[in-house]
Length: 512
Image (cartoon, rainbow, N blue to C red; front, side, top):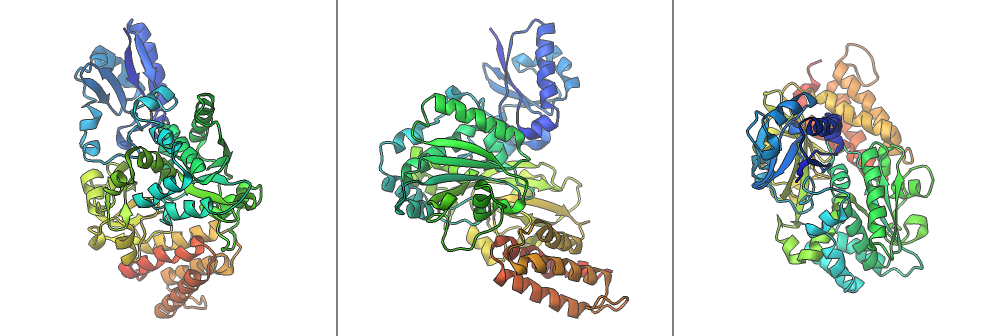
């Protein structure tokens, strides 16, 4: 009888040698005369322990990590196939402190199942939501999504039910479902992990959306930097189609070209149509005039992946998680200078301090965490005094910040926040699509002004005259223009990290 051994196929694990570890386990099994069935699962999200190998034993799965190819022989010698002690033995994954207190709804199967086994997916509750949905009318499904309180997880936090209802009630001969998988925010990887670790959940969510609004075609727009996710999705769609779960919904994958702006929904639609990815004027909104001029539901990966749970368990079940108007859970991603980086799915209301210290273990350098950026490169920099703010959309908006896609990047007390403010403005200058003047020109002028502030030059660029107040006033005016005059969030939100750095870390702008 063979022993099942799980080795992650997630990109992060592969980058740390998971493929080589898997091959070495197969070789050692032959050498030791052991019957082993290798399963390439997703990652459970404990990045510092990857590659994390798990063995199925009569007492449950036992994890070992981080495993290198050089460790494999000693694992066999220690009889790890029976869950025996070894210096890398972690015990049962579900008992690990990092996982034990999480509230995994969207990531419940990630790291547990074979991502491309439809039998595994069904055994763990997969397609229950779709099977319930096909017996309901579109309005009833949309009402369930609305009642659940689900808001878009891509950053804008627009209520998903309102968007779906608009598409449902807009007459058209053809409607589309588009998944925004162009995950480009710094410090974010939840979309990638889900596509690589549980692709059928995304497919099921999109199929439910199609049934709800009457769409027959859909696309998943994947960023070019995610080759493993793209390959997994293509294979999962083939399997789901062959199994009859996509009989009335044609779903395809399209690869992005690496432009950050294509994470904005209208630029994404332009790119899908084969055009240059630049933002469109709104109105009309894509829910009325979207892909190829047709009503289109555009949501991101985590939004669609939340749908099967809502349909399977009911809107009230999902709504019971969270606080205020922020309902359900969000997969938070810990990155930057953090000891235990990875993915933590929790209900809205958890604080930054809990995530940074209870889960993240503090900074990797061991120094105090001085600042955190939440919500990607357009998110505000938050000081330690705001680490106890509950992570929900309204509480963060009240302090001039945003939850965004749930990416959290930590910096210790050696960070220079003037340089980080400059980086934020330079990022906009590089990634701007160029359609509107405040974003295109404002970001370039912003970099120049910040350089003058840092260098201590006057507003006209003259040397050795520290006209700091004049330059600061100029920078604030520039930020207000970008905030009020930009066409989309790219230019409109770039001032957030710049102004928050100025507000909370002003002394960093005076050291030059």
